[in-house]
Image 1 (cartoon, protein in one colour):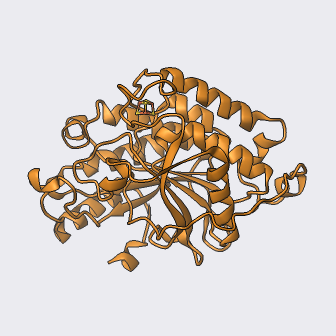
Image 2: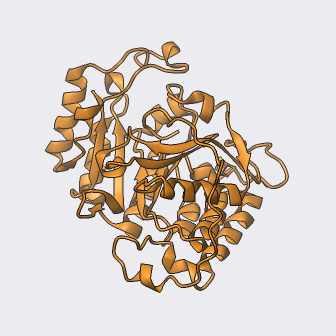
Image 3: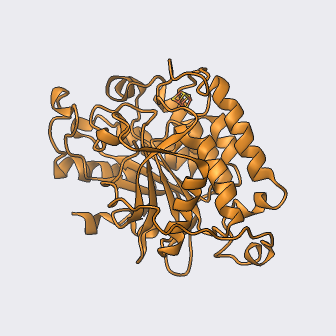
Length: 340
Ligand code: SF4
């Protein structure tokens, strides 16, 4: 589960929109604000082809950084995400706990997927990510959720923990876009994404918001049960940046395109924050928008893994922030003032 706040209060699909299919996207394509990336792939059917290719990849799954190589359409055995043909959604609705550039005045339109490709011992949403509390949905229902979020005035569709749901997301976006969806798509992941999965999202996702959880793979193995996190995570972030560039805001200060990285400071320096910031500044861009997060609290199994059994101290947070500045990162998210 990517770093963040609690899920929004659940919405239902009661009275869900049944919009007619729109065939003319030319007006939206010429409009800078209502031109999400995926519209460019809608008209010639490429969105649907991407969804089909993603479904095919589920047969020998490499859709996320785990590279399980299992046939998810036949069996869940051996799949770290335990998610088959249909993905489960835990909740969806306007979310006012995200960064200012996402939540704006009407909230970020969050869809919380159940299940996760990471198994962090300190997960704050373990019921959703590990116990997979949620309801399985068809692509039509997922598309309807996106349209409901748009009708509620949300500024974007915020796909939370999407790495194992790429095929289902693409299928839903193809339906929703044909029915008039015009919100930017935010891909809000734990940062353990594969290049194969990201290639399918090229030209579909507007804003990438990955975590960079660790600067050291041994720590990632110990606390999130993944191999080679740093190499996988860095390759993913570089690819995301190649696709969308640094973060661009509209005239109201809302993110419309680009990369936003989250880094949660862990107690005892476990996140190795300096390594993360150095990579971002030197190998990605010192203009990268970074949210250095101070919200760590012990959750789920963290009590058994000191020093994860305590909150971070203010001096630990200030030290991490100082490192970010020292490496030259200057677009540091200021939303934390309103979270504390
Ligand atoms: S999405 Fe990731 S965790 Fe799930 S089966 Fe595919 S490679 Fe494994």
